[in-house]
Length: 107
Image 1 (cartoon, rainbow, N blue to C red):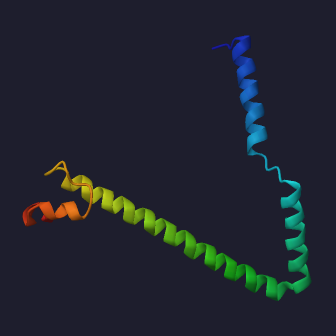
Image 2: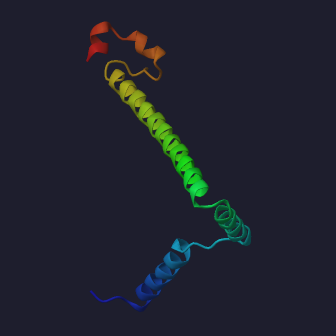
């Protein structure tokens, strides 16, 4: 399939946009901040820097884990609501689940 001149132009525009969008362009502030952080880490020494980055990494790991758990909990609640709506269309909260019989809740 051959492209028309217009299709080539649009494709070229998309490629150009992708290159601009996906390349990191830091602001003056972000570049200055990065230089300050790098020089601070160098001045404190390798051992301190390694320990600090390890702690920071641990904090980020646990924060990400909490966020994932919250998302999982929300999905689980939505699943329970949708299962409850099989029997009653007015199920939107956990309190609404009390309207179901014990046999319906067990399924």
